[in-house]
Amino acid sequence: MSTGASDELDPHPVTGAHFLSPVPPGTGWPGDPATADTPVARTEAQVRRLAKGASGIRELDARVSVCRACPRLVDWRETVATQGRRAAFADQPYWGRPGPSFGDPEAAVLVVGLAPAANGTNRTGRMFTGDRSGDWLYAALHRAGFANQPTSVAAGDGLELTGLRIVAAVRCAPPANRPTTQERLTCAHWLDRDLELAEPHLRSMLALGSIAWDAALGSARRRGWDVPRPKPRFGHGAEALLTTAAGRPVRLVGSYHVSQQNTFTGKLTEAMLDDVLARL
Ligand code: SF4
Image (cartoon, rainbow, N blue to C red; front, side, top):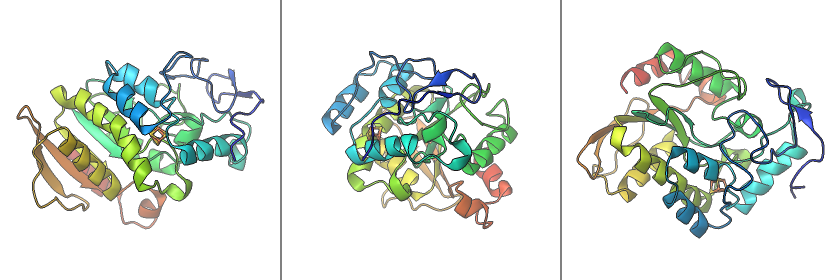
């Protein structure tokens, strides 16, 4: 069971300011999009309503970052943040909240991830930040010209993305990295709104892994886009040409996920990642 919150204050690794874990909204965490007044979704119906009603990216990110609609995931993210911290980070505050999307609000490219890592995004509050998968992804984004620096260590480290935004199929760290079908369906409302807000300037999407590929295709269908049938198959380097309801083409490219399981074994190499990023 989650304790809900720790009563200990720990220093942020960049700013040195002290925070509770999980981090209360609007208390000064670098990049926290929410305030104490941001509405909190506690059911799937509320996720759908708050996602649809978000007027723009900033409001959407804020609402995502305080969501509590999946009890199992809320319990897990807060338990890790209070009792399950990795030893190397035991003296740091843990974000312990959903990971909002990160990057350029006017992006032409979306990168779709699976879900936050328990000691990565769930600690740092930023997508793919604070673990090995992020080291790989941001180094590649820097080589491709989307990131102003090759590393993403912690929120507040100066990292900025241009022309690209990172979203995810699920926004809370799941136990064993496995969200349930219902959790994926509930969180998809946030992704749908991300896609809707991106549509006017979107050119391409990169799906990291098959769950992200399916999430992107599902979201595109719900948005009324033209998606090829039979369903395009995921693979590294796979491509599908989608068409928005307004008739704009959007290219979906698949990549093996940047997980350690893939990068340590050589299933995904730097050259393979650079190749798919160059096609966006
Ligand atoms: S996984 Fe998504 S829908 Fe579920 S609690 Fe987290 S942010 Fe909310």
